[in-house]
Image (tube, rainbow, N blue to C red; front, side, top):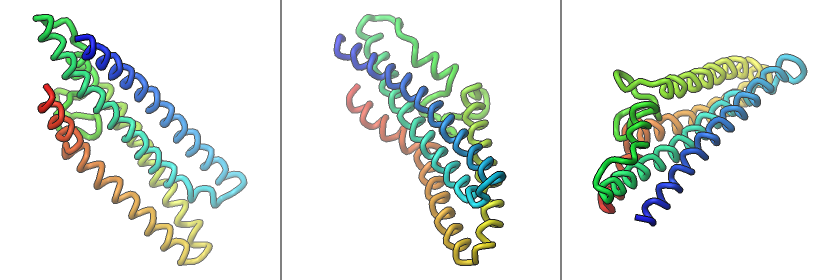
Length: 195
C-alpha cells in the first residue's frame, strides 16, 4: 500500500506539473504570436511568415502536455482503485472528481474536450485555445502567402508544402492518438495487466 500511495503522489504531482506546463506553453505561444504580428505590422513584414509555424508548434506542444496529463490521470485512477480496495471502502475519489469536473477518461474526445453531457469548462477551454490558435494560424497563413508571393513562387510553394505536411501530420497523429483513443488504449492494456 505504501508503494501504491507513493506512486499516487507522484502521479498527482505529474498532473499538477503538466497543468502548469500547459499554461506556460499557452502563454509562450500567445506572446510569440502577438509579438510576430506586431513586428510584422511595424517593422518586419516578413515576420508574419512565422505565425503559422508558432501556432502549429504551440498546438503540438500543448497536446503533448495533455497526453502526459491523460497518462498521469489513468495511472492515478488505477492506483486509487487499488488503494480503495485495500482499505475496503472508497476514500480516494480524485479520479472520479476529475472525470466529472475536468473530462472523462476512456471516452472519445478531442484531446480533452468531450461533447454531450460530459462537456465541461475544461473542454471549453481546450476548444477555446484551439480555436484561437487555429485563427492565428489561418490569419498568419493568409498574410504569409501575400508576403512570400512578393519574393517569388518558389518560396511560397516550399513554405506551403512544408507547412501543409507538418499540419496534416499533426492532425492525423492527433486524431489517431486522442480522438481515435490509441493513447488511452495502450495505457489500459498495461494497466489491465498490472491491476
